[in-house]
Amino acid sequence: MIRIIDYGMGNLRSVQKAVEFLGFQADISSNIDEIKNSTGIILPGVGAFPDAMKEIKEKGFDVLLKEMVYEKKIPLLGICLGMQLLFDESDEVQLTEGLGFIKGRVKKLEVDLKIPHMGWNNLKFNGKSPILEGVKEDSYVYFVHSFYADMANIEDLKASAEYGVTVPAVVAHENVYGTQFHPEKSGEAGMKMLKNFLEMVK
Image 1 (tube, one colour):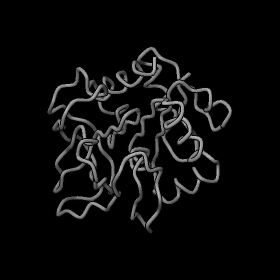
Image 2: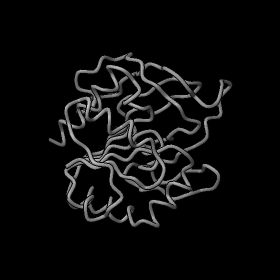
Image 3: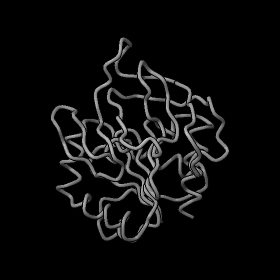
Image 4: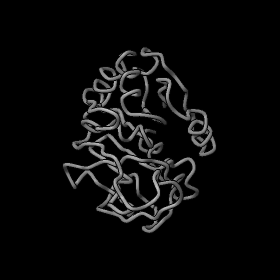
C-alpha cells in the first residue's frame, strides 16, 4: 500500500485524488504502524520548513522515514515543501535540520523577479531518471515556492527550471525522489511523473 504521510501540513487530498485518477490506491495516514507496512511513501508539504520538521520530529516520522528509506529501501517521493524536507537543512526563518536524504541546503530565492515563483515553467533535463521516463524535455509544470535547493551533488539533480537562478525541479538519490513543483497540478507531464513513481512502487 502506498501511504501519503499526514504530518499536519500538506494538500493531501489533491495528491490522493491524482493517485486514484491514475488507477492506483494511496491511503492518507499519520499512523506509524500503518506507514511501516507501506510499499511506497509520498511526503507532500505546504508551509514553512521549520514548522514541518517540528511536526515530523514530534510524531517520530524522521526516524521512521530513515528506517524505511535506508533499511527497507522503500521508494519515497517528496512534493514541493516535501521535496525541500529531503535535504540536509534549510535557512528558512532559522537554520533547521532536514531529513538528510539528499545533500544540500534550502535557501531563499534572491532574484529580481516576483516572489514566490508561482505558475508554469519549463523543465531542462540533467541526466536520466526513472521518474522522467516518457516525459518530454521543456514540458511545463506548476510551481509555487519562495525557497529552492542549493544542491551539493549535481548528479542528484535530474531536471531544473530557470527563474533568475537554476531551480532544482526534480531530484533523485537512489530510492528517494522529489519534485519542487506540484505534479498533481502540472497536467500531463506532472501526472506522468507521478505515474512513473507509482509504477516503481508497484
